[in-house]
Length: 132
Image 1 (cartoon, rainbow, N blue to C red):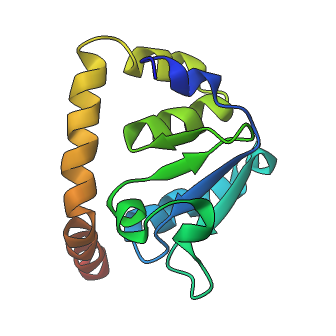
Image 2 (spheres, rainbow, N blue to C red):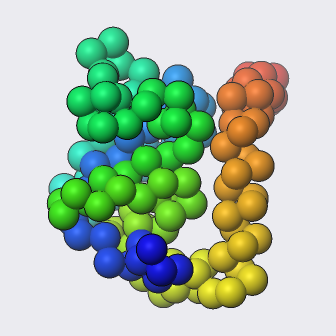
Image 3 (cartoon, rainbow, N blue to C red):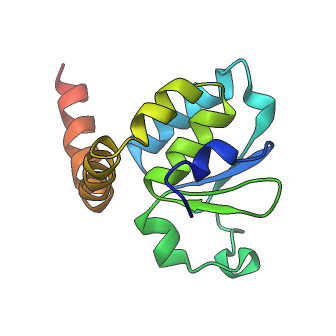
């Protein structure tokens, strides 16, 4: 997969998200209001009827990183899932910038760092929000 592959994601896309994650909840709420919401199907991987194996994936892998599947059956995982999503939504220039050498590596590393800690950070964020 080339660094610019996420720009080739074909709508409609399916975004697999963790419905228990506070950050994912915020993102999903925004996506449901987006002017191009018809281009995205949202699947909560925490739903009781969700079966990762039905999609050829492992649940723990899907919990570890964002997954997106486009209409051609191509999977985008991690930061590339975010890039593909935003490319489909029309933010192609920003996605191109995020694919540049150096920028891509930093963003990928930042995503991995955040993804491993999102539940802990989310709990902290929710407590802080409740105090404010």
